[in-house]
Length: 95
Image 1 (spheres, one colour):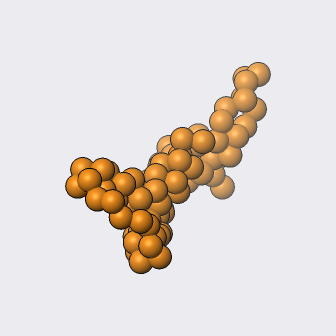
Image 2 (cartoon, rainbow, N blue to C red; image 1 turned 60 degrees about the vertical axis):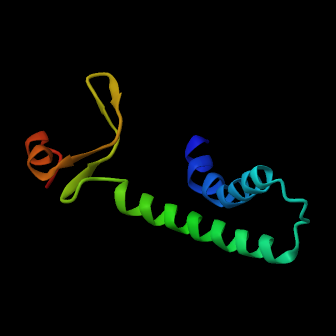
């Protein structure tokens, strides 16, 4: 749930929060017209897209790694994991 908040909602809402703080600090008595709402929406979508690109490039397995699926060993379930190719060959799970 926290990842959803950090990946989608926070980047999208950040321009609206910053604009609201700006209005409070400058004590403007302005109405929200369609121009700031449209601009803030575009800025929020761009930040959201940027965060998705960031997570896609910096999250996941290390380069050259091999995924070992969950297995049952010695009476316990070992969760799936990524290992480097040498460790996977030593584990005897690669053909």
